[in-house]
Structure formats: structure tokens, C-alpha cells
Length: 137
Image 1 (cartoon, one colour):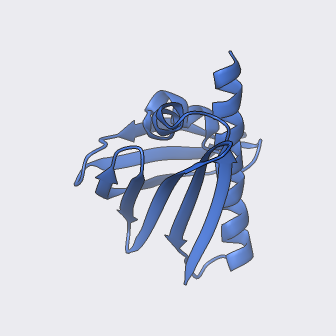
Image 2 (image 1 turned 135 degrees about the vertical axis):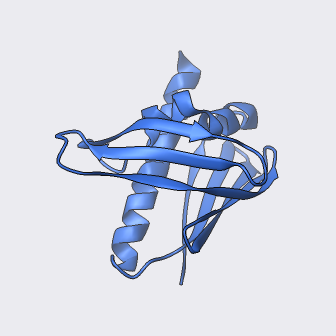
């Protein structure tokens, strides 16, 4: 089962792309809720390169690594990656008010489709808020 989430970011593609692919930025936006955060991120942005984000509950009660391998990179347009036996694609599409970022990913069986969509959507919404706030500085 494939799940799609998307958001619109009112910023130029260069800023959107950098915020999505730069570890120093990723740790600032990559969380689905206020009680979680990303403590470390690594990015080797090339086909065959690896990425990893350490996501932890702020109270220290749990955490996990979200990691995988980039399988296709088209700068400013598309990122494809595998994580475990699952795959995801991220599209960056020009729109009248900025960039639409669309993520399509393979769902898993532990959580409901609604839970998965909600979590990934929350992270994407944080991303949009982060990029737009950064642009205003």
C-alpha cells in the first residue's frame, strides 16, 4: 500500500531543497509532535549514499533511527530512497505560491494507514513552517 502526503512551502526551490537535505536543518524540523525531536542527522546526498536521522522522545523514554539509501537524485526535483524493504519518493513541484513537496511511501503493517499518514504529514507540515520562518529571518 502506498501513502501520499504533501505540503506547500512558500519559498524558492533552492531554500526548500537545502532545508530538506541539510543535516543542520533536518534536526530542526524532523518531528511529528512537540514531544519528539531529531538529535542527529547524516546525509550523503548521492545515488547509493546513505542517510540517517535519530528520532527520540524528549523525555528520553524511547527513540529510533530512520535510515536508508538514496536510489535516485534529481536536484531540485526528486529524491527516491529505500529504507529497509520499503521505498519512498519525494517530489518538489513548482506552484504559484512556492513549492509543493509530495512524499509517497510504502506503508507498513504495525500502524494504521491513518496513523502513518498523520505522522508523515505532521513532519512535512513542520518542514513547511520551518522553511517559511527561516526565509523571513
